[in-house]
Amino acid sequence: MRRQIFTSTTAIALLLGVGNAYAGMDEAKAFLDKEIGDLSTLSRADQEKEMQWFIDAAKPFAGMDIKVVSETIATHSYESQVLAPAFSAITGIKVTHDTIQEGDVVEKIQTQMQTGQNLYDGWVNDSDLIGTHWRYQQVRNLTDWMEGDGKDVTNPNLDLKDFIGTSFTTAPDKKLYQLPDQQFANLYWFRYDWFNDEKNKADFKAKYGYDLGVPVNWSAYEDIAAFFTGREIDGKKVYGHMDYGKKDPSLGWRFTDAWLSMAGNGDKGIPNGLPVDEWGIKVDENSRPVGSCTARGGDTNGPAAVYSIQKYLDWLKAYAPAEAQGMTFSESGPVPAQGGVAQQIFWYTAFTASMVDASAKAVLNGDGTPKWRMAPSPHGVYW
Image 1 (cartoon, one colour):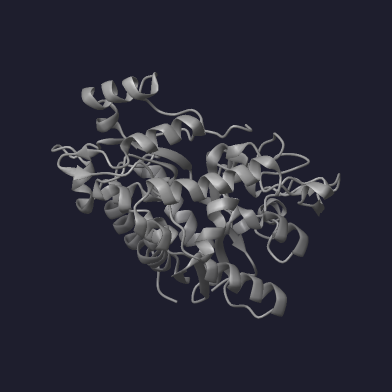
Image 2: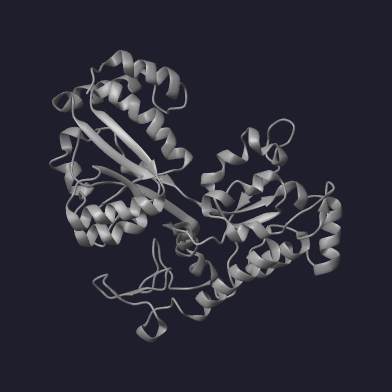
């Protein structure tokens, strides 16, 4: 989930075990030269020492095949196209990393858990599944596995404190079931250059009575959205908001990724509110869900939740491009890079790469630096 505090963890879960090639240090050195270089905090000697550990630890498993799956985003495409082949070349263990739509990832993992048919050995899936993994007990409890059966194949240099988001992938039994792979930080995105334009600043102050700047609440966000929508900048009319609304699995996480709690839904707590979490689901003292509606102690249909959905609809219709209503998460993500959007309240850092590549010239300065910035997301009236 891209969670309260607006951080999302996508994590690796192992549902069973492993999986041709000759391997060695030559392949490892080639990988370090091409992909790592001076990007690591480790010295080159320590990097090679770690590579040697992988080579030695993998010898009993040479020739095995491992199948892994994840959703299709740039991070996982890199893992699939670069890291998996490199691991295979270095260790002799063949890794096939498929990338598919996230809705399909969820369907396949559900099928595997319910039928026992082994579709994949490793899964990169949202930390939202932590409750499922804990209850079904069909994935490895990594805490015990790394100290027990998996000790010989656990990198001795692995430090769990280096990983962001382990609280999201730790179950109520205090065991780690998923290892964070990448983060979907959910932030506020805005056109820094437009916000610092003197005419925009003066006109906004004259209309609303306060300075144009990063909004800290939804009321200010709405003012900014209204101000920029229809305003002409560089000869083109722009929009004050961007979002997506097409019926699609991604529309589900548009709300489950803490939108309700951004408005003030649920109780306080990290990583989840207790006893009512950011989805409005109440759990008992044993972390068992007991209800989500207000009649059963939950908050999914409470005032903050209703308000959050209404604002989503109002802003999508009033301040976003008309085509946004027919877009999915993946289709809408790169739109701000086209240069016609002033701000976006619900923006994933997964789209950072598309905001600085060759297709994003409209939002980049001549020297390649961004005309945009990120900031903490504003929160709603029930916060």
